[in-house]
Image (cartoon, rainbow, N blue to C red; front, top):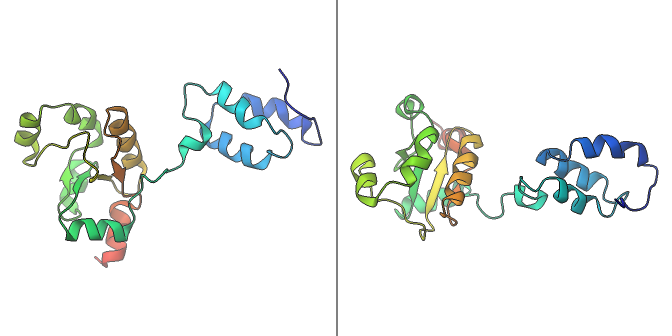
Length: 173
């Protein structure tokens, strides 16, 4: 395999290749060593075919900001799903949020519209909806929720990365 021009970065090659399956490492090393190995990004993608490509790990427009969330809530143009556990939800929630714990999300999004409406007392989201937003406490679980939704075909779904923590901070509660 040709790794490009070997320069002063040469000794790092073995270490880098042993960790290329790690997406975060892939992102960092690709940026840091792009001058040393012009083909490193393509090598990284070759070795991580079961993981998203380095570029795909970014948010790609799927993040809703606090101000966007406020606008969507004010206009009632949102299907806001809180993927925290029920006890967290009971302790405090963003207005209009429906609690669908992350552990139940995949199953819930696959329910028939009638069963979804019975279980959650709201209209079921459709794959064409562009107002589906997930949130959790700090963005970690909502990122997972977003991935699940996208895999199920809800390609326009987004998430509020700041989560309930940012909401409370900004709302002064």
